[in-house]
Image 1 (tube, rainbow, N blue to C red):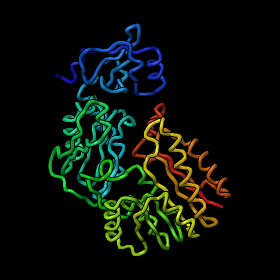
Image 2: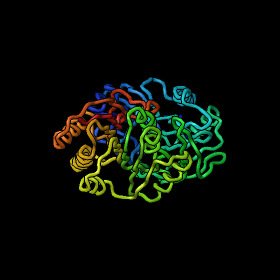
Image 3: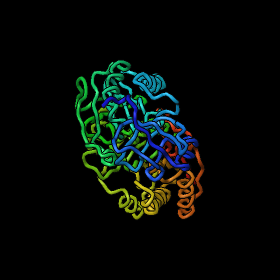
Length: 391
């Protein structure tokens, strides 16, 4: 199949048209009025009167049936996609360094739906999370080789999201050589990244600037919950007297300890524990901290999970606020898209009232700016991070 020989079209409903014109890039199955029997990766999209709206990645097995890539009247070409990739990379050139890491392509945020590319020093890790994105994989690899000149390109398509697209989970080297582990530097702090087995593409790059900012606020005795491989904990170690870092995953803590040794810190202790139980136990023991960081995984994977997720977020923030000393700092995050920033902030207010504390907002932050939010598409604004002072 010629990816750029676009012969098929999909007609969408008035509601679908309205959604696209408001700036969203997705059209769901329920707003598709007519579609082809075949499964081409790219289709022309029209309204009920056959007016051309643009072109989109098409995925018949998915509830997200269309992902818009262009509202131009002309179909996209290989040069069109190369230009999109080049523009995305050009926006990140300021982040480049021998041991730096950053997101090169952020899917919908860069008008390249379903495509993720992360740079770890001399290596690039990609994900193609939709059928259209997967069809572009050879072009993506060639373009990255040309623009970045990496030593190797790895695909980490071992994610459940691909199953919703009718795609297999795959992982492996696409070009060059890629070591099992690389060392990166984040604000001068060094980390070991397991590219083949680490979460996401190896590291949580979306919190990078928030972690560096934490050094402006952390002090005294610090507690880092859901520490994973120690990313927040080791940034806090620069400014805190001591850091206690907690996570339920023994393999993650193994790498966290290696990261600590790599940086030569002697003021960090790691503990394997369920954070909910740990916070309860610290409260019972009367322990208090000057700085607490909460960076949990997404509690709400879908809208139906939101009530339970809200309860979970409130519980950990309530317990953390009770553990903070007067004038203590709480750094708290949610990466659940289905919980809006306004809802998360209201939850934090509720937790503060229940803990009989007042909170001052020091900073409201989002994901690092190499993960740009696309106006009109709230799904791209998924990470909320608050820096609070508890009075």
